[in-house]
Length: 478
Ligand code: ADP
Image (cartoon, helix red, strand yellow):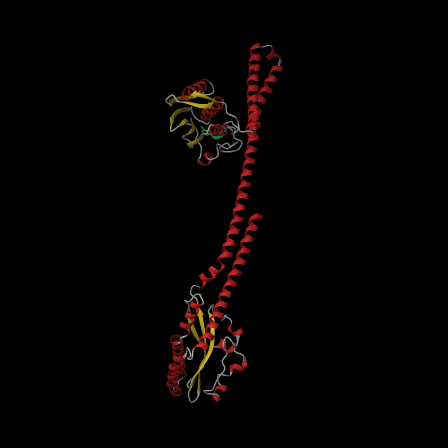
C-alpha cells in the first residue's frame, strides 16, 4: 500500500512538473513570437515608405464620410444602434481583409526560420465617426478600463481640438507591459494601433494565433515529457517486479507450510500404527497367540519401512536441493526397459488397475539413468492409480520420432483443472491445495518427474480434463 501510495504521489508530482513545463513552454512560445512579430512590425515600418494600412485608410475614410452624413439623420434609438453595429462590422471586415501586415509577417517569419502559417485577427477597441459632431460608435469596456486615465479621454475632448493633427497612440514597443498577452485569449498581441483620418478615429489590436500551437509546444516539451514517462515506467516496472517476487515468495512459503502439514500427517500414520502395535504386544492374551504376534510384528516391520521411505524422501529432497543430481546413464533398449517397469508395477502397486501398453520404438536404444528413469515412470503410474475415483484403466504408449522418445501415460482418473495444470510440476504443489488427505501425497512426485526428464534433456507435459482423466507425456531425446 505504501509502495502504491508512493507511486501515486510520484505520478502526481510528475504531472504537476510536466504541466509547469508545458505552461512555461507555452508562454515562451508566446513571448518569442510576440518579440519576433514586434521586431517585424518595426522593421516593416522602417523599411517601407507606405503604411501597411494605407488601403484600409482609404476605404474607411470614404465609407466614414458617407456614414457621417447619414448618422445625424437617424433619430430612432434602435435604428441608430443597428447602424452603429453595421459600421463596426464593416470596419472590422475591411481592417481584417485589406491590411498588408499579415503577408509581411509571414515572409519575415519564414526568413527567420520559424513557423509562418498563422491566423490573424483584428479587434477594434475604440471607434468614433467624425462628422460635424463626433459619433461614438464603439468602446471596448475591457480596454477602456485598462487604459491609463490620461489616455481615456483622448477619444472625445482632446480630439476636437486636434483634428487631423498628429496623435500619439500607444504601441507595443512604447508600452511593453501593456503588450502582454491578452488574458481573454491565447492569441498573441502583435500591435495596438490607432488610425485617424478626416471622418473617423479608430483604435484596434492586431493578434496572431498558431493553429498548431499545441504541436509546437509539444515539440518543445517532448524531451522532458519522454524523460518523465521513462522514469515513471522504470519505477512502475521495478515496483511490479518487486511485488511479483514478493507474491512468489509468499506462494512458496504457503506451499512449504502445506508440505509440512502433509508430511506430519504422512509420518503420523505409520507412527500411530506402530504405537498401537506396540501396545497390542504388551497385552498378555496376544503374546500367547503366536499368529497374532507374528501379524503385529509384520505390521510394525511394514510401517517401519514406510517411515524409512518417507525419511529417505525428505533426505533426498534436501540432497536434490543442494546439487543438480548426477545421472549414471546406460544404453538400453527402451522397449525392454518400459516392459520391465510396467510389468513390475502391474504385480506391485498397480495390481488393482487394468493396465495396457503399446510401443513403437523400432528397437532403438537410448542413454538413460535406469534408477531415475524407473522412478519417473513409476511416479506417473502411481499417480494414475492414486488419482482415480473408479477402477483405474491405464494406457501406456510409446514411440520414437525425430530423435525423440515419447512416452504417454493415460488414465481415466479425476483429471486436473486448467489452473492446476500450470502448477502441478512445482515443488510441493498439490491440486485443490492444502491439507487434503483423501489422496495422500507430498506434492513431490511430478516435481521429480519434471526434474528427471529435464536432466535427460527432455520435458514432460500434461493434457487433462476434470472428470475425464489425464495424459502425461514425457519426451526425451535419444
Ligand atoms: P502428490 O501426488 O504427492 O500430491 P504429485 O507431484 O505427484 O504430488 O502431484 C501433484 C498434484 O497433481 C497432485 O496433488 C494431484 O492433484 C495432481 N495429479 C497428479 N497426477 C494426477 C493424475 N494422474 N490425475 C489427476 N491428478 C493428478
